[in-house]
Image 1 (cartoon, one colour):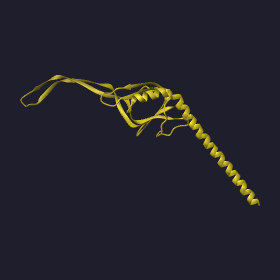
Image 2 (cartoon, rainbow, N blue to C red; image 1 turned 90 degrees about the vertical axis):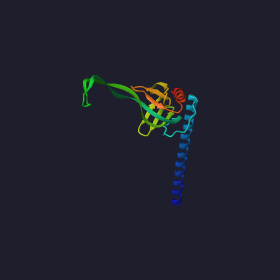
Image 3 (tube, one colour; image 1 turned 45 degrees about the vertical axis):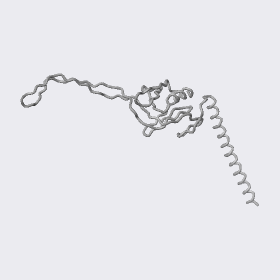
Image 4 (tube, rainbow, N blue to C red; image 1 turned 180 degrees about the vertical axis):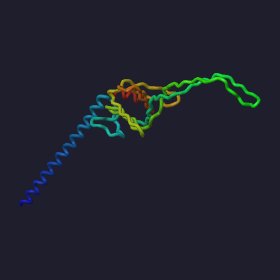
Length: 184
C-alpha cells in the first residue's frame, strides 16, 4: 500500500512538472508571436527567416549576399628625372642629372570580405568568411548609395564613433536603404 501511495505521488509530481514546462513553452511561443506582430505592425516590413541566430524579440527583414569594403590608404611614389644623356662611340649612354620624388597617400576603396548581410529590427549584421560586422541601427548616422561605373552599386553607411564609412555591395541597395530607414 505504501508503494502504491509513493507511486501515485511520483506520478502527480511528474504531471505537475510536465504541465508547467508545457505552459511555459506555450507562453514563450505566444510572446514570440506577439513580438513578431508588434514589430511587423510598427515597421510595416515583412519578417523573413534568417541564417543567423536572432536575439530575443529580434526579427529579420532582409538577407542577401554582399561584399564588404572599406577605404584604405595606399602610398604612391611619384618621381621626376631631370638630366641629359650622351652616347659615345661605345654605344653606352651616360646620364647627367638627378631625380626628385615623393610619396603621396591615396585613399582607395578596398574589398575586405564577402558574405551575407542581414537586416533585423535591431541591427545590421554582416557575416563574412574572414570578418563579421555588427552595426546597431540606433548608431547609424547616414545611409547613401554610391553608384560605381565598373562594379555593382554600393550602400555607404556612416556609424557613430567610427571615422571611416562602411560599404556594402548588394543586389538591390535602394531597397536595403529604404528598409534600413524604415527599421530605424
